[in-house]
Amino acid sequence: MLYAPNRNQLRFLMLCIIWGSTWIGTKAGIEIVPPLMFAGTRFTAAGALLLLYALAKGETARFQIKDAFRLGAVSILMITLCYGPLFWGMQYIETGTAAVLEMSLTPIALLCFALLLREETLDMRRILAIAFGVAGLVVLFWPATPSGVAPQPEAFRGASLAGGLAVASAAFTYGYGSVLARPLLRAYPALLLAGVTTFIGGLGLFVIALIFEPGALSALSRNWGPIAWMSWFFLVIFGSLIGYTTYMRLLRDVGASRAGSYAFVSPVIAVALGAAFFDEKVTLLDVVGIIVMLSGAYLAMADAPKSEKVVCET
Figure 1: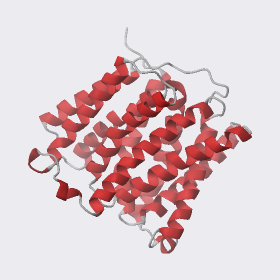
Figure 2: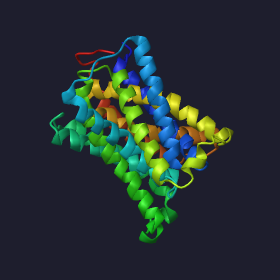
Figure 3: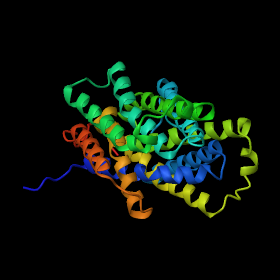
Figure 4: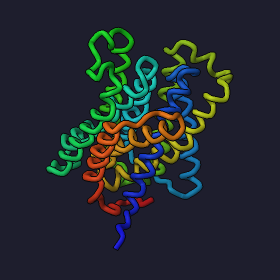
């Protein structure tokens, strides 16, 4: 009998494809528009659209006072303190470096916070999944460093060092916010929660950009050019409306560490897109790294439950 993936495994695959292609759009956008303004307008617009969609579908609920602090913390951690440093840092380091930093640290951060907050338990399968995924990332991106050796300290001085640290920090704020969000996902519809957190987090980025970011106010003229606008719309529709909502549902149903294993498949998508559209070369070592990463993702998601009983199913 042919293997038939369940709904959450299909969601996982869709998330990997979408978020594997967003790095290119982000890099193209922030080369033209100040990064915090680019991120702030993207998430504010996406949050508003998600809330309208939730209202149209009737997926609404009254938030309890006791959940207000957690809701605010999740919004700030998963959007404001994640994507602000991430977009800012990508100005100063290569896209591939940013991808490997953020994607290798994300599953580790998710598992660590899930264990600390007792949302998940540790088992050998999850340890192996993360070990395989990180090892595959190292194999895949190692040849990109000069002479096949690790980058030397001088390569990370000044802005490059700050950019790398900013990108790395995004994995931990996102991981902490994801684990804090799971109890909320048991009580409220995933679509509604995605809309609220995206809108609040996006507003936070927008305000910070207006106050602190050079050129942010002039960027409101919206004279960005076709490339930046195409990138912005792609990130709003696919990266946020579809991708973030899908991630929230996975987070609710399969837990933070399993959902976060998308980071082991998204680089494979990025490599495939580079080979298909930019004529980038795929070496034998790349193939080895891809196989190892996919093995880690398989270990994480093979036993993923079809769904979890929740108060508000979406």
